[in-house]
Amino acid sequence: MLQNNVVLKASHLKKYYGRGESLVKALDDVSLSVSRGMFAAVVGTSGSGKSTLLNMLGGLDVPTEGTVCVENNEIEKMSEENLTVFRRKRIGFIFQNYNLIPYLTAYENIVLPIRLDGKSEDRKFMQEVIEFLELETKMQKYPSHLSGGQQQRVAIARALVSKPAIILADEPTGNLDSRTSDAVVKLLKMTSETFAQTIVMITHNPDIAARADVQIRIEDGKVAGQGRDED
Image (cartoon, rainbow, N blue to C red; front, side, top):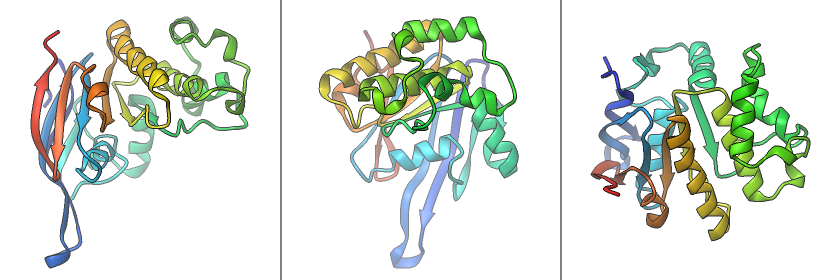
């Protein structure tokens, strides 16, 4: 069971490929926990295992061994159908390629996950998020008419409005210039503080990671260190 304030807990995660001399240990006995409202950065060089870890935490891939609990739910024990629904309701994703649907407006992209569940969005909360992200004038625009930073803010809004237990962000500034990257990370941190939203962000950039509440360093598929921002 998770402690009351722990939203995400991974225990002894392993992800192995191949066997014998060809065995690759993408994740090798990784354990971590993330508390409610925390902004955590997972850092490491390319090939260190951080993206594999994110896929395990979000239920996008199945571990060779170990467990992932999100709000007391062991996601690897769910059926594929139940996991798909659970991800849509309780896990928000932000990718560096935005993953917006080009023929939908910004508004339609934002509400899509909620509509897929046959529900109506919390209009008051959604308006608060849109204003917070300064997207009020962009709602009827298509992704091709938005800058990279604006598209990323739409992706953040989409992740927020369904009120997930946790948001997983995979290199969310990877396709942005330094100024826009800084703005997006500020927004993520403010989102965590303003809405008590739990965020786990993958990044290879130490300057970006330094903005998080806690940093988790992954090296060669293992947790090599974990530290908290003392500011």
